[in-house]
Every structure is written in structure tokens, then in C-alpha cells.
Image (cartoon, rainbow over all chains, first blue to last red; front, side, top):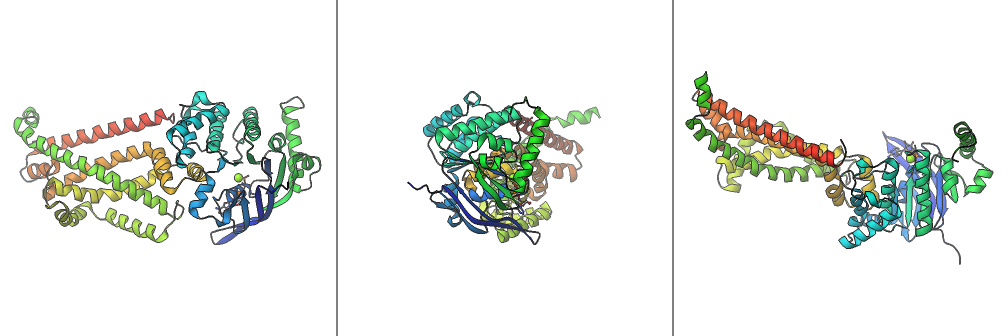
Length: 263
Length: 229
Ligand SMILES: Nc1ncnc2c1ncn2[C@@H]1O[C@H](COP(=O)(O)OP(=O)(O)OP(=O)(O)O)[C@@H](O)[C@H]1O
Ligand SMILES: [Mg+2]
């Protein structure tokens, strides 16, 4: 059977106009992502990673080009359909963005309330997901009572609640210490395996990519500088960004862990 | 001096102050929920239709904002005078506490709308982004995210609103609205009864301080419950 790419990004450009000036943030991005992949996108600050991910879930509309996710053609969705589509896309944020007015339970229930599920359904689903991310004992806590790692688990649980087919993660471990960060990445890998969920992982850290992803792309000034399997790119980096990242990283790893560290 | 203080609590003073206090409370209790309702609706609309809002509507936003600012900028006495004919139309009379409630609502709604707008704006952008990314409608974002997240700040603004309402009832008192304001003007100003004036002021102070205390407590308790302080 021929595999049709699950996410198909074709020649996507995004231009922002602010203060009467044009900022071309994405300049013709082409990317195919297979279902069930954990796909890493790396690049320097300002390369356009967040913009790209926001185009994927329709928070931003591409200025030109097309994005297809499963059966959805994103640039052709009406405002109402965009909301229906987004209910099937989970998103995890660097700063968690949990609702302080809701308990852990309430946060995870939120997307289900939005999708108009009934109370019993919500309860069953929330408890199941909280179990999956290992935080069910904290269900009546408020976000203000949780550590960063626990908050991100809630963030992931909330993103998973409504059976999404894709999980978008924008720097979801950047605010966490290395050990906690690794446990969150383990959770993502586990979810990918158990639920067969496609994950797009944006990060600054090649360690994160190496540890978590199967395939990756390097974004450089709004274009894809290279893409391929993580193994290929690590063994033979072509783009400037990848070279700098890998060198920089080895240097840091040596400096911090001098051979015996956690990595 | 001692005599003066005794007169503050005399039967005569009580007979004048007590009904006036009840009238003031009546006006405040009726006007507060109406103003809160319209303030929440108007404040949210201002936020939603702003150019960086959930559903930008430039012309509506600017026009609506200008109307609100216009009412805000007029001295409340003028707004009350303008509102009296409207009261006659709505409740049938243009004097007394009932008529005054309409005028009070019109004076205070713009103030409270702006307070609601600023409370909502304090909610972090990330939370809005999260709600949007989950496919929440504008209505859900306001009702399920913005207002609950802003609640501690909103409660403090409810207090500001109620205190403003009390002080405006005092102004409305000069137009026959009744209440403590009218008593203060009628006895204190026209008849030089400083004792009654002082008693009226004392009751107003107690009301205001009590409300402030209650509001602070509620708001703090909510923040504590959410472990934000
Ligand atoms: N709404 C906007 N209006 C104007 N410019 C924008 C807007 N959003 C993003 N940009 C610009 O687009 C560029 C890319 O931003 P983006 O947030 O996508 O980068 P990033 O790769 O995610 O960076 P980081 O790693 O720091 O998160 C930046 O130069 C930014 O200033
Ligand atoms: Mg970013």
C-alpha cells in the first residue's frame, strides 16, 4: 500500500505586515510528515518554527501555499470548521498555559467541554488520561500547586483529552530541568507508541531531537535547510544550522557532563 | 461637644437616617446587578472587537468605545439629569429611588465596562492561545476562560463599582432620589443640622469600608484557593 503523507505542507509562505513593513517569516516551506512519526523541527530563534506550527493548526493562515492535515485542507476551512479541526489537534506550550481558575481535572476536562461531551464521558476520559500521564493523584490540585514537570504533564493530558490525531509541541520541555525534561519526553514517546499519535516537536535542543524523534527538519530563516532521518542528519549534517547546532551541542555536553553525565 | 455626640444617636437622628439608609441600600442593591450584567457584556465586547481581540470589528469597537467615553467624560450630575426623562419612560416616574436606579445604571455602566475590559486584558495571552488551539469559540473563551481567570481582579472591581454607586446615589439625592445623599443635603446643607449630616456621612463610611473589606477578603480567598498568593 502506498503511504500518503499525513501532513502535507506545500510551498507555504507567511508574511507579516507590521509598522508598514513586510516580514517574510516563512519562505516556501515544503514538508511531508508520515502518520505515527515523532517529527522534530529545529532552528535558531526567529527561524519561524512557531509560525509554522501556528499555520498547521490554523491559528495563523499561510499567506500562500497549502497545508493539508489528514482530510482537512487548512487554508480552505471556514471559521467554524477551523474550530472543529482544532479540537482534533493537541497543542503543548513552553509555558504550559494552564488555566489557574481550574483544577487539574478541570483543565483536562476543558477541551471535552468545548466538544460538548456529556459529564460521564468527560469524567471517564479525564481520569483515564490523568492515569496515562501519571498524575491522577493530583486531580484536585490547582496549577499553582504543581511543579513545572507536573504542569507539563497536565498540559499534555489536556492536549490529549479529546482524542487528537496530532500533538504539536512548541518547546514543551524548554522550561524544565534536564531530568524532568527527559521524563516528559519519555511520556511523549510512550503516548506515540500507545496511541499511535503523530507528534511534531519543536525544539532548540538537538539532545531532545536525538532522544525523541525519528525524522527531523532544520528550519533556517524561513526555509527548510535540510530534512531526513535523525540518524542521517546527525551523522552527516549539511545545513549551517545543523552543523553549528551539533558542534555547539557536543561542546556543551562535554563542558557540562564531562563524559559521565546523564546523556 | 458631648451633647453633640449624643444627638448623633438620638431617636430623631435614627428616624431620619434609618429609612434613608434603607433607600440607599435599595438603590445600590438594584443597580449593582444590572450594572454588573451590562458592564460584563460591554467590557467583553470591547475586548473581543479590539484590533488584537478575538473577533476584530474596527468600526464597531471605535464607535462603541467613543460612546462609552462620552458618558464617562460627562459629569455624573449631567448624566443623571439626562437620564430622568428616560426613567419616566421606563418606570413611570422621574423622582424617587426607582427612577434613580436607571440613572445610576447609566452613569456606572461605562465605568464598570472599562474596569471589566482591563481585568480581562490582564489574563495572559498564552491562556487565550491555549483555548483557541483547542477549538474554543469566542463565546466559550470569554465565558469559560477569560471571566473565570479574571475573577479575583473582577471582584476587586465589583467593589470599586459598588462604592462608586453609593457615592453617586448621594449626588442623585439632590434630585429627589431619596437616600442618605438627600438627607445630607436637606438637613446638613439647607438646615445647618451638622449632627445629621455627620450621621449620614458615618453610615456612608461604614458601608464603603465594609464593602471594601468584604471584597478584599473574597478576592484574597480566591487567589489563595488557586494558590496564586
Ligand atoms: N504576528 C507577527 N507579526 C510580525 N512578525 C512576527 C509575528 N509573529 C512572528 N513574527 C516574526 O517572525 C519571526 C519568526 O518568529 P517565530 O516565533 O516563528 O520564531 P521561532 O523559530 O519560533 O523562534 P523561537 O525559537 O525564539 O521561539 C520573528 O522574527 C518574529 O519577529
Ligand atoms: Mg517559537
